[in-house]
Amino acid sequence: LELVQTDAQLDIFRSTFELPTEGLNLLKSGVINTLQLLTSKNPEYIKSYHLLDRNGVSIANYPQKTTAVPDYLGLNPTLVNNLQIALLADLPFISPIIIDEDGQGSSIYFAGGTKTVNDEPLGLLLVRYDAAILQDLIAERNGAAGENSFGVIFDDQHIQLAHGIAPDNQFKSVIPFDSTRLDFLIASQHLPN
Image (cartoon, rainbow, N blue to C red; front, top):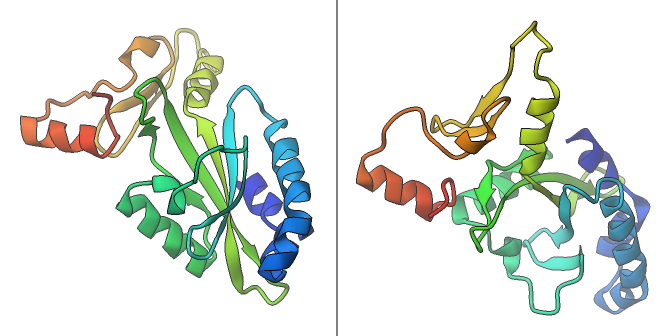
């Protein structure tokens, strides 16, 4: 989280927002190269980087998209609201685990604000990680608290996000859900379909 906040303050990002629109094209290849370089820090887990303006419009992304990127990447309204609050309040942002639209994986987003030299918000640097990083981090720590110890990560809905010795328990709840709640959790991308 601290890294994305630090990276968001790179001069090339600040300059991108402060240039008039016609000047943006001059910097765009440099911005994309910078996003590519940031992605190379952890290519196993980083799925994408996005530079968004104050309105959530994608200025640049890596890997580059061949289709239009929807405002705020098409994230659900609750996440968009939380991103807007983070931007205006100059707070870091961490999303809950989100099931990818194709249902083939899950992601977690981190964001840091890009600011003027006077600390006024300009936009957001958003990084999308493969949520498998949590499973791998938890598994690496097995035995850290003594022989046979392991960790488990739960979300606020009591859904297991990572399990030190039973990775197949990912996205299983430790409490039963009624059908209405289950439908909501699937629709809000907390659980796979």
